[in-house]
Each structure stands twice: as C-alpha cells, then as structure tokens.
Image (cartoon, rainbow, N blue to C red; front, side, top):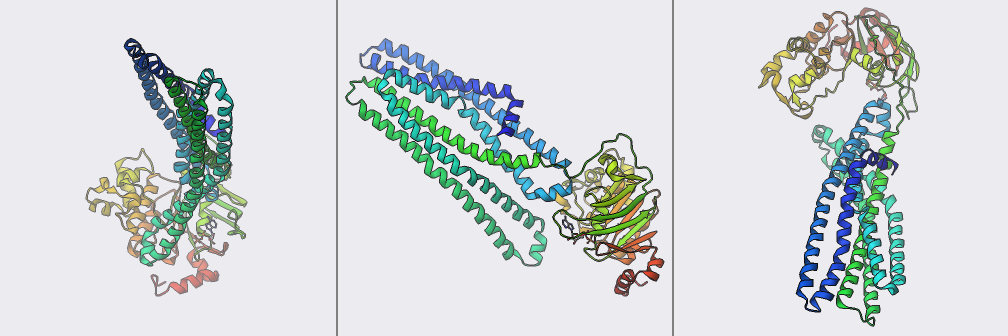
Length: 569
Ligand code: ADP
C-alpha cells in the first residue's frame, strides 16, 4: 500500500480534484430521497401542484449537478489512475534496466513481464476504484444513516446490527481473498512463462513435432491459473451476495418494524431509498476492498523489482578510460548464482590491443561466460578483469559498453527498417559509415537485394531474414559503433565457409580493434593472433594455431575431429 500511496501523493492535485467532484456527486445522491419525500408527502398526497413543480425543479437541478460531478469525477479518476500506472510502469522499466543479468535471472523475465503489465493494471484499477468510492461510500453510508436516524431514531440499533454483520463479512472476505489473489498472480506468471517459451521456440517445437508436449505444458499452466482464479473468485462469489442479503434482510426488517409506526408513504419511500444507498455503498466498499487485496498482492510483487538490490556496483566516470582495448584476465573464477559448481576456473591471459583472440572449446566449456565478463554482464566471483590496466568494476558502464560491442550467436533484431536496426549501433552514424560496416559484415549486397534496400522493414526479431543474414546484420550493427573491443560469440555459425572467411578477413583488416572470436570451428579461429582453448571452464592452451597444434591435446583433438570436415589442415 505504501507504494500506491507514494504514487498517489505525486499526483495529489489530480486525486483531490476527483475526490471533490465525487463529494458533489455523493451529496447530490443523498439529497434526492429527501426531496422525493417532500414531493410525495407534500405535493402528491395533498394534490399541491406548485409544491410538486417546485420540488421537481429542485430535484432536476440537483440531479444535473450530480451528473456533472459524476462526469468530471470519471474524467479525473481515469486521468489520475492512468498517470499513476504510466509512471509506475516506466519506473519499473528504468529499474530493470539498471539490474544485472544475475538480477534478471533471479527475478525471471516472464515474471517481470507479468508484473509490468498485469500487476500494474491491478494497481491502476484500485486507484481508479478509490476515486469512485473513497469519499462516496462513507458520505453516502454515514449521510444516509444520519438522515434515517434523524427521521426515525428507533431504527438506529437495528441499522447498527446490520452494519456490524456486514463489516464482519467484508473483513472475512478480505482475509480469505488476499492470499488467493497473490497465488493467482503467480499462476499468471507461470502461464506467461510457458507461452513465451513456446512462442520463442515455435520452429523447434514444430520441427520436433513436440506440439503435444507443449500443449500439455500449456494446459497444465492454464488449468493452474483457472483453478487459482476460481478459488479467489469463489470467495467473492460467496461473500458479495451474503453482504447484499444481510442488508436486504435489514430493509425488510425495518419495513416490518415500521408497519405500526403510522409513517407517511413518502417518508417510507425515503427510508427504503436510504437503506438501498447504504446497501449500494457497502457493496462498493466490499468490491474496492477486493480490488485492494489484489492491488496489495500486486504492489508487493512490484516492490520485489523496485527493491531488488543491483548485484553490481557501477561507478560513474565522465572521462572515457578505454582507449587501447588491452584486456587482461587475472586468475578469474566464476560461479553462476545458485549454481553448485564453478563455471570458470582460474583464467589468466592477456589480449594485446588490436589483436584477434580465437576462443574454442566444446559446448558448455564456458566460452560465452568468459566473454560476458568483459562488458560486465556478470561480475567475476574471484580475480580481476582489466581493460587498459583498469579493473572493469572501476569503469563506468556507459564507457565500458561504448567500448565493447558484443554480437551474440542468436542475432536479436528489432521490428523496423534495416537502417533503423543498424543505426541502433550508433544514432549519429552516417549512411557511408553504415554501408562501410555492412560491407565488412558481408551484408551490403544482400541488403541491396531486399525490396527496399536499407529501408526494407523487418518483422519482429527479423523473421523475414535467414539466420545467416540476421547474423551479418547484427555484426554490421556492432561495427557501426566503432568499438575498441568486439566480441563475436559464435556469430558466424550460420554463415557458409566462404562468407565466414570473407567476414573474418574483413575484420582482420580493421585496425585498432581487439576481437574475441568464439567458434566451434578450427577454420574460423586458426588465423587468429592467439587462440584460447577452453575445456570445463579451464584454459587448456593459449597460443597461435601452430603452438597449440604442437602442445595442446584438446586443440589437437578438436582439429583431428574436424579434418575432412570443413577444414583440411
Ligand atoms: P559455451 O559458450 O562454451 O557453450 P557457456 O558459457 O554458455 O558455454 O556455459 C558454461 C556453463 O555455464 C554451462 O554448464 C551452462 O549450463 C552454464 N550456464 C550458462 N549460463 C548460465 C546461467 N545464466 N545460469 C546458470 N548456469 C549457466
């Protein structure tokens, strides 16, 4: 709740304006039965037309004022709740951007999405609901009770008893509903996770004809959500009618007790009307408290993101510290959080500025993990990594990530034109610079072959391109940034041997850029200045192709396994 109050406080003016209009609306509602009573008892009963017209006119005026209040309250309530949810979403988004990959692994991407979308919507509904009833329910409820009590004091004990029973029911509703709504959101996380996994790997699912397995997973997640939602809704389904029933029985009881009171008909009508208003406001209170239970569960989940302590401390230097691209790993070990074993063990090597370092080793040997430590996607658990003699932890993330460009194996492109995707590397790049980078990445020719060249629009994730074309665009995008350090994480795997070799010789011809080239293929790394051979997170050899061929058994084994494949020595 603190979180919600914090955001409401930021827009207190809007909030209070909505509440003011709501108060006008509530007072107008409250006056209607009293005027009706006069029309009936003084006008209709005594056949006094002028009384009917006077009070009728007053009634229309008050109804018009009430309607105006309701319209304005709606406008301000929507504006406030939309502003609160927009700010909350953008604060969450900003926070997520400051988190390390370790934090993201911990929070889980699917759960982050549910929180930024669904949980924020719960809070938006609650804030909106507050401005519908916050002042209205108490004003209507208390006002109607006071007016009733003034007219008929003997009704006070009966009304108090009815309200006490309703309050107990509302309290029980909240106590039972709250944990169920939290559980419901967790099930929604799970459904989002399963759907996301399925949609992002739909080709693999189809290729392996695994639709049935995925369907089963989806059904189970969907069933989980349905069960959790039903369980939460059942609570509402039981309590809402119970609360209504209590107040309705109360009305019947009061009418029964009024039978000997010799009341005027208009007076009786007003009493029933006030009781209905009390019933209506109790219903609203019970509804908003249900929304509050959901919003509290949601705000707790949002707080988990907002209060997540970034696992990395970032320094903020204004001066650019990366000039050469000299990289040193000093006795670096790394363990993923929650993992029982180290992924990298005592890694020590140096990459001189402007050189190309090939990294080779079996799948799972730690190649990607090693390069991910350079731009600080993760921090080394032990040891230090230095860029130009400075510990990466002492370099501002902006500086470090301007200097280091990474091209992952799975090229991630965005919907938009090819040009927009390439410019993502650097907004200030000229067309000539972009084309030069595309030429080095062997992308220029195929770009010109697309229907609108650099202005061809790509679908989400670049669906209208082949794997190799996506990789070449991702490489061109990285080159547009003119990085000092370029990390190619097996990003030429989808290229044919001839194109790969052309791309690599283009990269070698670039001066002053330190390249890390991860590949499974000897043919890709053999020309590198030095090759790092990894196995089970340990360095097995570090040297030129010739050196490793003479003294590194792991390298020799990889070489032997590929002879007659795509490499013939
Ligand atoms: P390679 O690039 O050589 O194929 P990786 O660096 O991707 O190897 O992975 C090395 C090891 O670290 C593997 O055992 C993998 O399961 C584990 N690993 C990779 N990423 C994570 C992660 N985010 N959390 C936990 N373990 C991971």
